[in-house]
Every structure is written in structure tokens, then in C-alpha cells.
Image 1 (cartoon, rainbow, N blue to C red):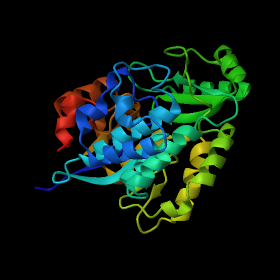
Image 2 (cartoon, helix red, strand yellow; image 1 turned 90 degrees about the horizontal axis):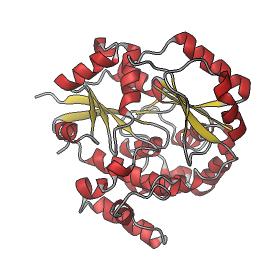
Image 3 (tube, helix red, strand yellow; image 1 turned 90 degrees about the vertical axis):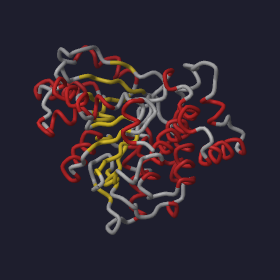
Length: 338
């Protein structure tokens, strides 16, 4: 029987929340990789992932913090990736959203599992080094998950007027970033929207030049010789595909700790390229959580992929035979995992 082809998506910040507490214990207890990650953190005097994941309750001040959330999310996603049933599914490409890029590097084989964790762990700390500023999410898609081009243009014009920058293009949403004063001023300039912008607590001005201190720290501590050519195609935050025999490892390192940190991350473009270039039988969203599923669904609707042109059509397809398989959703996890 021919294998089904899948594109794998690695999640970023904001995906390990109260419902995900215990994710590692539920799905990856006894994993040698988890034991390794714990040993690395213990040797550095940090709480182990098993301890953090095994807390009695979710701590809203602790668990979402960059230096905690990044290694937790990376471990959940990377270990999920290792449980994919390779007898039935062929991974044809890997991508990620924002901090999920570091996990994508490890899943695609562009860095080792050990170095992938070291990068995610270090960048969780480095992500807290930046000029003053934050992020907000602007929802542009309506109930049908379609985006009115006129609304999109009006939102971008409003951002330009107050000095707010695009941070992440996320399907029918736009994450913006900038100084707090600029974010405060934005609301008065925005067109009518499905809901008011949501400020992201504890998030810095990610994917903007205000993150220069984070980029400098990364370049100083994370060596270029950790990087090699990926085993499978790797789609970055511009939609560029890094292929095995075409990749310059030094350029991949430079992108990871340069453009990827300092410029807008276009997750929509990454998903669009994944669909058009690789035409997978399914898209697999690694855990924890499944909040990124909406953005992926909206990108699918925008492309009218497989004749999916609205949220209702997407939902119907998901009920019949999921095109998007979220490993954070138990019923869908059983489709793809060993």
C-alpha cells in the first residue's frame, strides 16, 4: 500500500496552556529524549520539563514565560514528530510558526535533536531580550473564514499610520508588534473588525527590528556548525523551501538568527507553499494544543484547496476524513501516531 504524504507543522508560543498541562506525561512518559532534555536542564540548574509538565496546576505567571514555554512546546512537538507512523505516512516537508521554526529545524534534520533542544531552550531565554514593546492579534477573517481584501488593506494602512509593524501573518489573522504607545493608538485607526484586537500578555515585539538584542544573543551563543542540510524540505517564514541538495547550511543559520527574528514571519505563505509545492494527502499539526488549526484552516480556505472555500466546508471535510490532523486532538492523534 502506498504511503500517504504529509506536511508537518510545528507550533510556536501560546500553544501550551492549562488544558495541555501533563501533555508530556500523557503521551511521552518514559521517552529517552525526554530524559535527556530533563538532564540538560537539571545540569543547568533549571526546572526539568517533567517537573514543569507535572505541576499540580497551570501557573499563568510561570508556564507561558518564554524560558519555560519554549522548551516545553518544543519537547511536546518534537516527541510527537517521532511518534508519526512512518510505515503509513511519508513526511514530504516540514514547517513551523514563529518559535516553531526551531522545532522544524530538528524535525527536518537540519540540526540534531540535541542541538534543536539547545536552540529552543536558549531562544526561550533570548526571546525576552528586546527593546520595549509587545504584540496584538487582529482578526480580519469573518465567520466564514474569508478575508475581505479591502479590510486587509485598511488594517495595514492603520498600522502604518501609528508605527505598528506586521509580526506574523497567520491565515485570517495578523499579529502586529511595536512600542506599547503605538499599540495603544492603533485601535482608533482600525476599520470595523469581527472583534477588537487582543493584546498578548507577556509577548515582546517578536519578528521586528526591536528584537535585535535577541538576535545578537543567538548569534553569539548558537554556532553555525550545528546546522547542516535538511533531510526533508524545510519551509521557512517567507515561504522559501530549503531542500537537501540546494541548502547552504551557513545561510540557513544566518536566516534563523537574522531575518527569522527581525522580520515579519509569514506563516500563511509557508502553508500556501506547502499546499502548492507538495500537494500533501494531509497536513499534520504537532502538539501541544490545536490553536494553530484555525490559522491553517483559514490559509486552506484562502487557496480554496480541495474546493474548501469556507469554514463550514472545512468543518464538514474534517468530520468525514480530516485533511488537517491535529495531534493535540486525541481522536485525530490516533490517525497518525504509532
